Length: 294
Image (cartoon, rainbow, N blue to C red; front, side):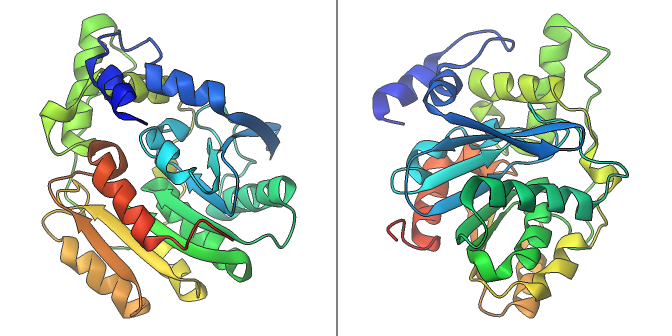
């Protein structure tokens, strides 16, 4: 996103049920693809050309979680941003819903889109980071790198975060609840909750049909990491609501499994670090990911 687009996005004053200019542009520029998922299809959006980088968004989310990062990541890569099963535009996962079943859907989808044996980088945020661990272990021989962003699934205590219920609210009351939830869980600085963040949060919430925490074991990521030999990167916002103030304990646990893991905390940012501190996050990704040139 260039500076003119950044000013447009930051000054947009649309309602939460309108599509932000940044999201509308990215949607228009994307190449949409679908792969089998349960009784329907999983939806992917693709940008750019080059070595593939797969993005898995957070719980109750969609590809929109990466809206402020896609331009930077796709400059010299093929970016494939999923809507995970039961979220965004994708169909529900197969039943019974298990991490293994969802991971199998993802793996088969990548084979269909990239071809079996194609090497790729994998980046996951929050719930997507937890799923990334299982997918990375399954596809380790094809993996160039794994980047975990705001990851749970480590079996460590996390501060309780009480969220407002949304579905029984309408209008300004519903918008206020979204703002409260963004402040409590997603962004460290309430001043950064702009209309783009609210619109993304609202759309994602309206298209959530599965509770990711209901079927994910608390230690799924921790148990998956020993099976991953590809280079490992870990990024958290310094004030991530699921980790602060014990962020270092997460780095210590990960380094205990993978002493070579590169861990970074982005100052002042919260859980949705890729959105809240997009410039710093994009710079960190550029430094940590393998080169975009083959």
